Image (cartoon, rainbow, N blue to C red; front, side, top):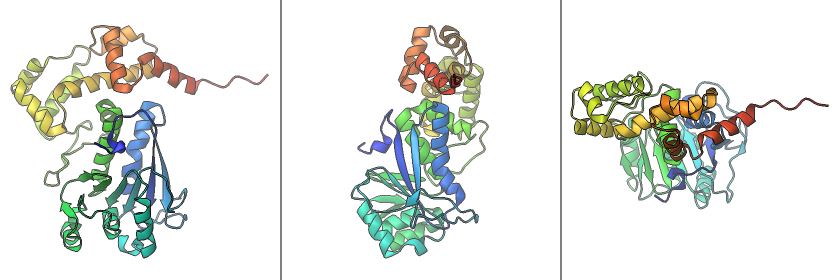
Amino acid sequence: MEVTLLQRSTERLDIDLLVLPDTNLILIASVIEPLRGANRIAGSELYRWRLLTPDGAPVPTTSHIAIPAHGAFRTTTEDVPLFVLASYSWRQSATPAIKMQLSQAARHRSIVAGIESGTWLLAEASLLDGLSATVHWEDYEDFALAYPEVRAVKDRFVVDGKRLTTSGSLPTVDLMLEVIRQRQGYSLALEVSRLFRYEQPSFHADETLSAASAGLPAHDPRVTQAVHLMEEHIEQPLILARLARRVGVSARHLQDLFQQSIGAPPHVHYLALRLNTARRKVIETTASFADIAAATGFNSASAFARSYRASFSESPSETRRRLRRRIMPLPAPP
């Protein structure tokens, strides 16, 4: 995919958020909090964001809490992704000036995203012509009639070329977790979702949310049961055939269930759970890497180090050194 937002990278990603008046607080948090969580878990600034408003003044939200801005939205040649956030009062913001600014900004921005009603603003600026896009389910019919040149779909979020659109707050969390997964890998995205005890549903609107026991993106109770078994057997991992038997299905069927429910095969999810457990031990304890490897089901410290580096783009010793440098006290003045 050509979209750099959704490509593997160790570089910091900067994002501009254009927050329009009367946007929901939860919509703003749906963009920012997964990124903040990724930074916290990784122990480094993987993501940085800047909040912009039409005039640079704090923007009122539907909760009557004003959000301060880093500055005013202006047309520049910056190429960082631009996320346009809007909720109920988007029409008041769809001024000729804003539409012209969006159109001009799209010439330079690597990505322009319509978050919830931000999709309407992009359509008004003719930035979605000939592309697929999604909106909040309550607005779907009206949107499809208003913009026949846009292929309206009912997915939770849509990526079409350099345009992203989401259909609400929780689907926006879906999108941000997908960004993290694509850029930093499945393990970090899983740990961020568990940080919020968040259940990531399927990306299609005709499937409903269900209760999460541990932030698991699972709908099928057999998948949930299998994940619980994985969590209980971190030190001595169960082979797939045994795991499937415990759940009451064949190994092949369990693989299909995982793919349908969470979009990843069982071994990928299991490895992510073990590596995330290992990473917490690397950061929070002084245990040797050999002991951590044994405690998380790896045959040797070298096998653990290879998997760790493949997932987190650094070795366990590099993680420990980097994070401990950050918390070392400053030397006392002479």
